[in-house]
Image 1 (spheres, rainbow, N blue to C red):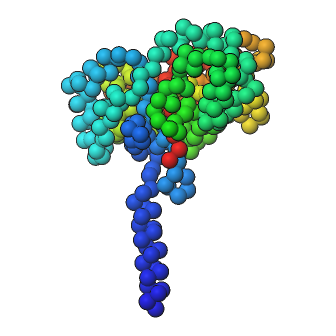
Image 2: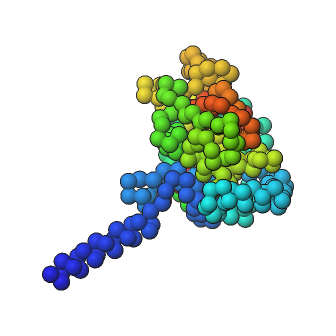
Image 3: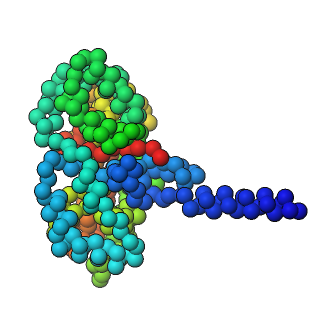
Length: 322
């Protein structure tokens, strides 16, 4: 009998420890001193994937002004009052992150697309960790300074061991987080949120947990502040190339944006403009984006997440397994 009791106590202790250590989607974490959020959790609740805060540009005084502003403090207080949850203070850790020169990459981007990305197309896959290794090997074999040609990879390495630029596989997990389990792509149902006419407060109407978390964690510098996305950006760069084998697999066709200016259309292999990395984007259809206009009437807002050739300044983020 005594041995049975001890066994039951051991089981209870294990369950308790598992429960204590479990994390949830959207939780804030700092790993290697890097402010991050949880974008994927496995069945145990103990292992998954975190996404870093967005890389900020060199000597960005604007972000420091945001954090020091009266509006930012009011924004933080309002979030806590509205949702009744404490919001982590990530500002100091964010400013300690390595800087990233978006402008320098933009200047050399066309040269990279012409000379190097065609050669890498057959090597890179949807898996970001594998891509990081193959890009590093390619640079070593060809005598290339990776900090010039692939600065995002160097930035991820600077965060610490195990950080890497996400490929389409990791970004699909992120899309699943954004869409609360809804599959991504134009063939799937879009998320629909309704803001009621009679009440304009944040917590009324139909909101996804994504938007709830945006305010609790402080994903954005919006609300009369410069539109900087600190966490969970609506557009980000992938390490998967458009001309990689991922593009030609049947199960991925509905995940690729094929309309308008940034669509992937026609024979991809015959067009030089597709010698590029994918960008993941959240597309808005109809109505007004309530993230930008929280105090206006928005009847219906649809959002779909897809991969495309979106070249309007995607954010750089890294991911790490835990």
